[in-house]
Image 1 (cartoon, rainbow, N blue to C red):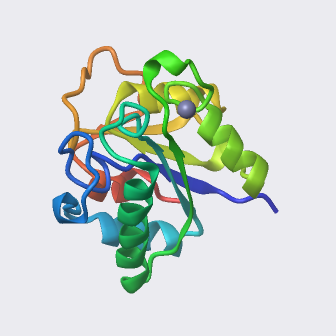
Image 2 (cartoon, helix red, strand yellow):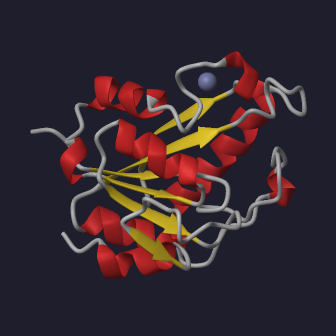
Length: 175
Ligand SMILES: [Zn+2]
């Protein structure tokens, strides 16, 4: 049976947005993220992270720096009982015109190819309209825009729900 997945953006959803985060010491989890993920797991969701990391192509940090932070983050989740099924990242800048940088759906399509996902029953939680657009383009209609990261434009958002943070997603994702 195909999986139902909660897709999470990283910066601004899981951790506080600091701009081109690439050091563990700058990584601060947003309140309620572990509880929310434990809850998603308890109702049968897998969790996948999809994150734009253009700082790599821009030369602000290396792909190795990304993996160091990523591995540390995954350990923090694991220590609290949260299994992250996979992490997809786009290292490209806007000029590359790649297929993976959100708002393009490439990372979602990669995830679907690899993990056989039921996109109709899956969700995307992001802090930018590009997250919502990418999810919609990949066939995910259930979307949440959170205010815990970038400043958002509520009026022009296509998101199904606009919430303060991932913690509140427990109230709208109920099955
Ligand atoms: Zn890319």
